[in-house]
Every structure is written in structure tokens, then in C-alpha cells.
Image (cartoon, rainbow over all chains, first blue to last red; front, top):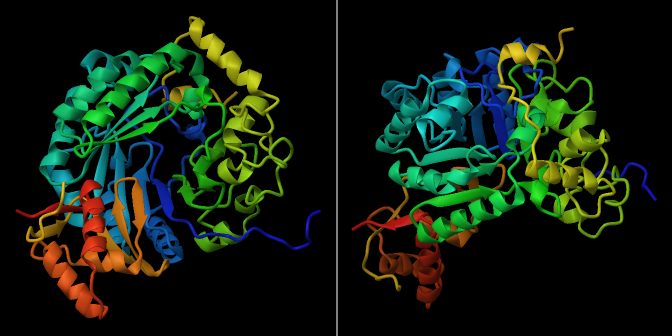
Length: 374
Length: 91
């Protein structure tokens, strides 16, 4: 029975992801931005961002990611970094490195940036440039070297999918060559553009297992020298991930136009208008908005999650994945073997063995407009 | 591996040790991560300044807390901190 007025306690945000822009010179077909990103054109102004950073910091947010799109396209990035440093954030620039010069890396350091996460698509030029949709491989490696030289922790990120998973050894050797302090091996999560291109991106189980064995071997070998984060491909698990550590418990994303999201993929949910930082304070959004409260706690859960003894561990998994696969955002994440929809995940796995011959859709404004212009 | 009591220790330049007002505790910040510290751990790490050693940290904390026999606990924590890359030997 539901107790009248009983609400789950609200913990303050710890991580703020500031998506400064949807503009990006790259066109990666696994981009996590919403497929209709080109619909949202009005970017927040510098003063709006400063206020958002101040308000979230006051509530207790401490890890800050500047992301996008490509955050380097914002000329006020240095000013925002400096503001974040004054507030005591630990700030991270999540970048493709495209167009980044040694001078700007130094200017960002002087402004107080703590680390730079450079993404590289693959360990060799042709493949990396093809995936990025832009000639960028050689410069990305140069950026990684500058980042290292200038005393930042060097964080290299490689998104893994069927076009580069066979090169796991090459990816790890590249990370060693570049002197990465951290390597994020991010198996593609199927949201946004990645969901659209899933049939062309999803590796087979055998590919995934071989790649994981290679990563594990290097992890052991590089212990104490390089920290390797391995983001598991959850379709090959039988329990869902504790997505975002639970909805509205830890993570806050603010999209380029000011929409506040409980995770960067949430914009794809059929929720209507997300609260916007132009109209509400971060505290009002976090504590009072209906959307941030909607999937807090356990009362919202239908079966099989409701009576499941693992619900306190995984919170029913990912709301976006539930919606994208079943059409019902309150359903159990279909990755879970207890979900009545698990066959949808098994079908995708079977399809990976014999993917249909369709071209990858690259992420750019023209392709995006197809999703909202008729 | 056992930590030499006279080796100077310093906090890692790739991590940040910071007081968090909202949490009322010290935390270690690093790429993609945050470690929450209890009061004693923070007192130990604050002293990793490139000059202090296991020996001098023990002396200071035994004085501060008016107690004895902290060597084993502090050594154990510093070895964990070294393994996690939070601190480095400064020589």
C-alpha cells in the first residue's frame, strides 16, 4: 500500500554534465545526442551557464563534464572553466580534439581545467577518419601528446563497436604509445544515433568475448600504470545496469538549450517538455519537478521489478532502454533475464550474427532534420 | 612491498584533495571518480606534501590524537594510497 505523502529521500546531485552545444565537426554514427538534436537551436548564453554551475555547485555537485557536441566550438569555454574552478568543481573537457591547439590547451589549464578526455575512433587512420566522418586521426594523436606534456591526466576514450572491436590490441597499444593515464573502453550503448545504427554497430558475442579477454590481459599488465575503465555492453549481460546510479540521485545533464535531464539520453523519452534552467533554478528542477521525481524510489515500478529483491541494486535498469525497446518507459529494462521482453535483446544479438546490409547513418544536422521535418 | 619509514611522500599531481562543504568531508577527485575520506585518512593525506614521511606523519598524528601505536594503521593506509596512485614517493 502506498503511504500518502511518502516520498523517497532526495540526494543532492554530484555530477553535472554541461552539454554546451550540439554543434560538432565530427559525425560519429554512435553519437549519444538525440537523433533530432538539430531541432534545438537556442544555446544558453555564458551568463546562464555560470548561474547553472553556481546553483548546482551550491547543492553539492563536484564532478563537472563539459561536453556536447564539441564543447571547443564555444568561444566562452575558457570563461566557463575559470568560473567552475573558482567554485571548486573538478572539471573535465570531453572532446574530439578537433581544432584544439597547444596554446588553447595551455589557456584551459591556466583557467583551471583539471583534465581532458580525448576520443579517438580507432587505432589506424583510415578507419578512425571514416568513423568520425572527418579527417582527424593524426591531429587527435597530437592533441593527446600535448595534453600529456602539459601535465594533465591523459584520458583516452575509444567507443567500441563491430568496426573496431577486432582491433582491441591495437587500441590498447595506441593508449600505451600515447602515455594514457586512463583508458575508457566504452562499448557502445544503444541510444541516440547508436540505436539508429545498432544493426551495423553491434558486435557478435564471440567478438565481444575475444575483445574482453584482450582488455583483461592488458588491465593486468598495466596495473599501476594505466587505469582501464571497461564499459560493458549490457545487451550481453543478463541483469541491467544501475543506470545513472538511479534516476535523479546523482547525475544532472543540462542540454545546450537549457533542458535539464536526469541523464544525457533521457531526451528521447516521450516526456514532453523537460524543465529548463531558463525558467527554474537547479534546486527547483532537482527537488520539485515532476520529471526528476517520476522514477525516484520504487513506487513507480510495475512487475517484475516491483517485487524483485534486486531492485535496490539496479533500480529496474535504464528507463531509456526500456522505452526504446518496448515502447513503455516504466517497463523493466529488457536486458534483464526476468523481463518479459528479453527476447527483444536476444533478437538484436541474433541479428548481430548476420547484420542486414544497410549503410551507417552519420550524425550531422542534415540527417537529424529528417527526424522532425516533414 | 613495505613502505620505507623515511621516504618523503607527496600527493599525486593527477589527483585533487579537497574539502567538500556540502558533504562535510574531504574527497579525492580524479578523472571520472571521487573517493570520500574519513577524518583520519584526510589528516594523513594532507601531510603528503613532499616532505613528510611515514615516520613524521605517525609522530604528528600520535601527538595530535594523544595516542600511540598508529604506525601499522597509517602504513597500511599509505600503502593503499600508493597503490591507488593518490600519493607518490617523492624521491
